[in-house]
Amino acid sequence: MSTAGLSVPFLEPIEVADSRDFLRSLWSSDLAMDLGTANTLIYAKNRGIILNEPSVVAIEEGSGKTLAVGHAAKDIFGKTSRSIRCIRPMKDGVIADFEMTSLMISFMLNQVRKKWSLRKPRIVIGIPSGITQVEKKAVIDAALCSGASKVLLVEEPMAAALGAGLPVDRPVGSMIIDIGGGTTEVAILAMNGTIYSHSIRVAGDEMDEAVQRQIRRVFGLQVGIFEAERIKLILGSALPSGRQRSMSVFGRDIANGIPRQIEINDDFVREALNEPLSAIISSVVTALEQTTPEVAQDIVAQGIHLAGGGALLRGLTERLQRETGIPFTRAADPLSCVVRGVGRVVENLKEMHVLCISQ
Image (cartoon, rainbow, N blue to C red; front, side):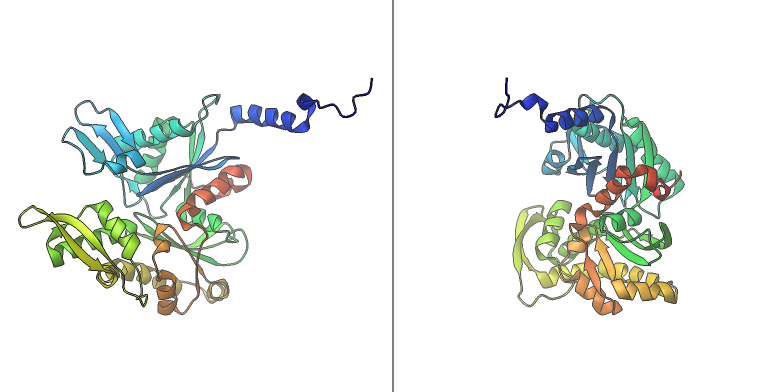
């Protein structure tokens, strides 16, 4: 009997491939993590970025019960009763509260792990280049306590460069600046190694705090840290943009404690941001002064690349170019550069294991 024209779906190759993918997924549980001061991102092997949440935890004060993590915790930050405490367990790119960091990682891993996974995940984590051995051990211990079977570390500048698509494996000097929430990493890389690396604890959080201080000093108004972040995102810039922008800001009057509203413009915010931006520019200039003539030639030829959330600040690439005379390029999707770079290590762990650093 002829079967021409009959459909036999269970024999189609795609069904076989799907079943093989499912069987592989039972064992393939490798993850990459960007454990950031402001946000934590997780990348799963063969799946891409599967989680992007603020690094915030809310717990019940008496019992220590976890009430919320990530976006849900950030939404209630500063709006809870005394029985609930909201915590940002990361500070300046490192663990400030070990217990809360472990709890946060564990919660996020439970969110992303497949229910049918047969083993605990191996995790590769991006860390700032300037942290101490004690701080590295704290990251490893927190991840192991959260359910990881093995933890490897990759320095964030290398991860950011991989995520930005720079040729770090070639004999060409590549320069990357990763402006995160807690740290700014300035590095020059080549041949899968670091020629120069420097980390300063001035980044997005310091910009937010600078806005807070300026509003307090000029207007006598106390605003929350996330309100300062919102102001930075809306009005923040490194250079004048031509058309002035303004917005309403709400806070608590320091003198009498009564809520009050003020109006501020981008000139005001730019003045507040000048100090942290000057510190970042100074670290870039210092790095350029340390380069050899050969590496300097490569940097001038291909420019300097910006990654991290701070790279999104208006006019930053133009100001850096004006200050150094070298072209700057902002990476595509700078917020996820580090986790995508660590993800590349996870996807090719056998070949890229050399990029991982030892405890």
